[in-house]
Length: 155
Length: 158
Image 1 (cartoon, each protein chain N blue to C red):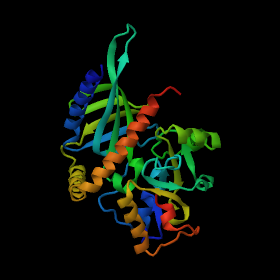
Image 2: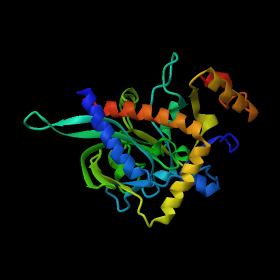
Image 3: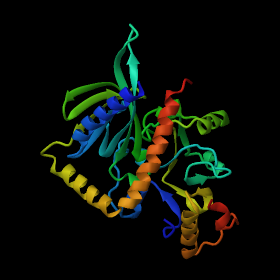
Image 4: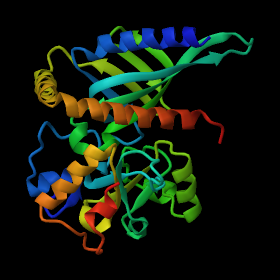
């Protein structure tokens, strides 16, 4: 990923730009339109050693016009009038989703830039953290475009 | 009670395993012309809950399950699906029908004996997994924990 401009890429976009999957590409959301989207969930940032491991993006991403949030797993469904009827857009909705995670989904069309939009990378332990930091170094990143050091981002 | 529910879960898992061992698909009718077809990597029952009938006795069970789609390591969390399995009907030993928490009608079925393309996909996928066993163990543990948390949240009253 860091070799390819640090972008999180949807299945369809991977196929378009010719990224060869290691195993195979999942295809279940091709018919719903969901395969064109990069998939996330609304969750609270990890604090004080708590929180699941994973990539946590900046809240500002939710302002993207192509951000679509559902309170359920909709298989990325974006056909017909489904988005208009079921999309959540209020801050109260986001707060509710972040505090009682069900199988909600927030999707973004085609790509999300990891290096521009990442807020926190939460790792499972010190060894994993060191590996992630080292990986960024190897790829030439000591800071992110927003000026933060990699060590500040990787917890 | 908990022991009984664990036994019920175990029995359902064994039945599901018989469906998935040769390779399986989950099909979900989400109300558009093309149903969702998931080529199943793993289908794990998370827990079972009793359905209480009108007379107060246990009239059946429902389940929460997590389904890993073949290729989920490339696709991300949207290819690890949470399913509530209500109204489970054993149509054949290799075909179970159920309704999920979104009220979508679903079924899980063994890949057709003559579907050589899908059988080849499953074979290729399993070989790839074998080569990356440790990474997959981590992914299974992480996504199963997340699915369990989400299923328990669905069980809470809104």
